[in-house]
Length: 484
Image 1 (cartoon, one colour):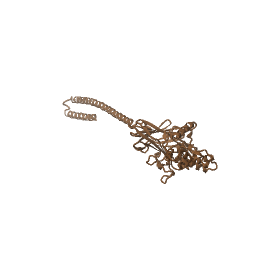
Image 2 (tube, helix red, strand yellow; image 1 turned 180 degrees about the vertical axis):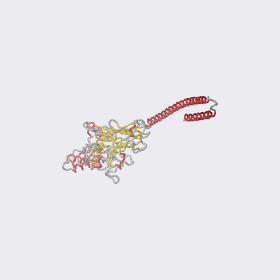
Image 3 (cartoon, one colour; image 1 turned 60 degrees about the vertical axis):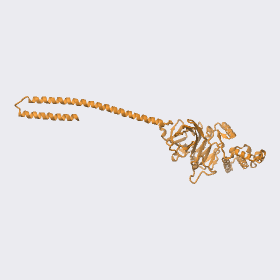
Image 4 (cartoon, rainbow, N blue to C red; image 1 turned 135 degrees about the vertical axis):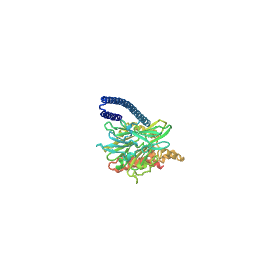
């Protein structure tokens, strides 16, 4: 722009000079013949000045351009350095926050199939649900899928507080896929890390994966010793469309809400309908036997109390919550020092082809080992180090006997006919009170006996007479013992 203005000024001056010379030449045409030569010399001088000025301007522009280029390069370099610095800070912050080693995809929802089982996870809140695939590869849910799966809950209790790991907004959660399953991670800041590991496998070498091993690991990340207790609630759905919500391993219907404080006589529980089946194993193999297992309406289990508030013989359906059953399991406390960890294990087996699930083939593969452990458990009243707590134990009965010094051991025996003779109602059955364990005196066990007897008596055409007599004799002997 400067160059153009400069040329315009020079051109005007040149035109003016020529015009003046021309006018003067007309007036003095005869006076001086050298005037045209002087004008030409003046024009040449002006052109030389213009060229010199142009060169100076061009040199100045080049210098300015180089300075601008240098500034631009410096600016770009500084911007890049600033951008790299911000990225580095973000990475450092991310690494500081990524204290459980979760990958970037840990916040993405998971929908994976392993053999015949489908698992879905809402990573942001750590909720999950399971389904089994039928012969047409259609997914049949076995756990609730409503409300973002939050009714399938995991709880952690410390000496100070109880946390719902799924609904508590102060807890960080994420999930990732592994080679054989899925891991859901929960972080209770400055308290604990909990990993819920779902490992899928086949109960038989000829099958696709039809079982899942669930391992819950708790790590103490505080700076003090603490006590941790785990609780799970599985919101089951299969039994809600069947005749009964649950069945025992003997296929006896569970007709009312029930709480078990010992599982010695219950190898597994079943939730099923005509299309699918799910077995829940809390004993056998490497299972960690819970302190209690409750089968109840979901509204009974979701209340604020840590242990379910169970009422004897209350039905599964309530006025406010119809046909909504669930399973609650609570494990024994784990005392952990800082950085220590401990785990609990249980299993699920699924079937989606209308046939019963067959997880017992894996869980009880070594039947002899299990029977030996059962005998040891019966002998010392414990299982896997767990002290069995029952509403009415043999120890309490012995205390009552000691409170009556006038009755000798021989007199007590004479007052219990079942000790010295068989129950009168079933003289062909070999059953004695002396062989009774304290687990047989619990209300849960007695109710299971009654349910089994009722079930056998329904089908009179193919009833197993010997089994019916045996059960009646056992029930009579228990009632006799409790009446003393």
